[in-house]
Length: 166
Image (cartoon, rainbow, N blue to C red):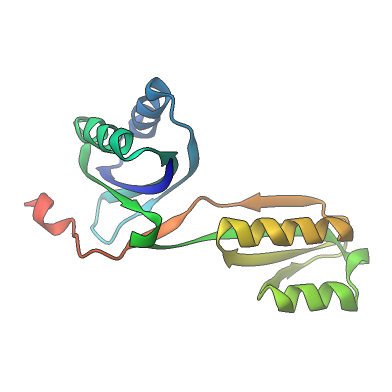
């Protein structure tokens, strides 16, 4: 089993995400993370899906995704074929602010993005392992809330959507 990133390019129709996720459910493949965003092309949206699967199964998944009428193209990549990051937000009580917390924030290249009366929000961008490691450390500082995005990725191979749009 390997980690893969699947990039799906589609028009933004109601229910498209549901139709795509059903394919994973039917094949018994868990989605580790999913991110939806606009692409560089007007009216075309990009779904970035992180899964752990076999080579054979990933090919079948992508082929089945491409059969959906509203899908323009789907690509899959191994982890070494993409540049990727995730964003994590950590909410901590103001009372946790001390020199020890400041040192941790600097060590992980994180930053405070909001300081409110009762809490601060720290943001970190990195790989899941890094944001998870920081979460473990921040538990000592009475973390109140944690949220992490799905993977945001761009491919290293020079495959472009342009040839499929004509």
